[in-house]
Image (cartoon, rainbow, N blue to C red; front, side):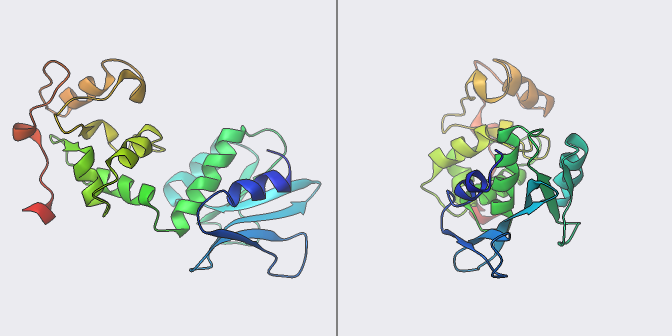
Length: 212
């Protein structure tokens, strides 16, 4: 990703978004979320390169800055919560898209964000089903969306997606956790017994406070 058109088109691919030039200056073009009017992507030319300002979780802020020299504290914005991405060709497109997507999630009440927050509530020693996670996220019918979100887990160290199983207690496929035994190994490390690629939901199933 090197051009403003690519960046804006990707920003506009998210639901309920629109482009604006708030300063009546064509060099500053941004993408906002309809309704709240919150901006999550700022684009501008500076020092011969296109720059993007994106909102970032403080837990990820320094990770991005230390990983890529072209990700720096945000120009003209709160440097605790915003990063600047310099599109000089040194950052893989998938990482640029991920940073933009994270910015969008931070300014919206997106289903994906609610799914991740729900998964964080599953305590060590317990598992929850996709349907339970969907209900905890406020969308009981989006169990499939839970699976999609967890396979794209941006922070596996803090979002324990391995604690999510299907309605029969069966574990996910090998592709989800980096190996055929990885989910089982992580569950066993939590103190959960896995037999035949399956967990006993009666013994280990998590009961959210809302269901007690």
